[in-house]
Image (cartoon, rainbow, N blue to C red; front, side, top):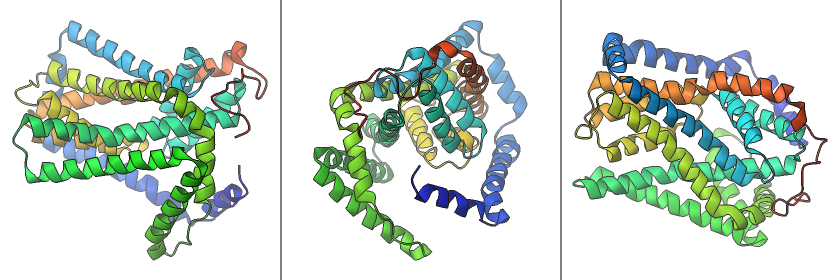
Length: 365
């Protein structure tokens, strides 16, 4: 922890009570509006339940297998960015932290600390954990940016392009190109990483200046440090990390697509390309943590988007609720189980910083 971090924590603790409560209250209001006002007006619960019950046991089994596979793909990204970690340890870490993120407001910060605690108990240094978190987070955001671009491009080929789709597609491509160029500059050399840090620092300072905030400092050092920590890992495993990230995101989409088809939303009503476009833009919304795990926000985006694409309201709502039950609710009890495993499995424990060394993550970084 740096010298600035304790001060930041103290500043947050001194904030007025109303400022600390406004975020949670807005989240609760949003959840209430979605589930108790929007959903009943959109369709009836009885129609949704009828759509759920229409699935055969084979379809239910396939959905459950797809959901389990989706949960397993979380580990692939962690394993590719954390050399030396076992699949069992990766499962315990990802499922436990996912459960925290899905149930606690501000759970992302808590799950971050929990990841450090787990990896430390298994002998991994903070440096190696930081590299894994930084790289996996970077590629995850690339996927969130890239999937909407891919979906819009497929839509352009699949149907007559509208001006709105063309503009959105070009904007998405521009954003993705900027992100890729920034990563290339970051990894090119320490000097280019420092220049990129200074440039983005000036942009950030310009954005927050109207709010009376002081200019940001030290971004050149932060980008250089990130480059030093991640260069070896990215050069050696960027293709595996990319593949693991894509598999994880597309496996999540597969659960949604199967739920749509099994409750009766046919490809003539919502094509897989249209479903991918709605899914991709809903995933973008999770970049801003309005609620734990995007609860309420994701449901609203998916239901309205899929219905606008032509899906029947009851069937669309049923599919989305099934999808969220398997991808949002299911990890919560699993996370409780994996947390107990972490507490009790002493054979995994190692002394601090005693995990096998690797050339991909230098401890001196």
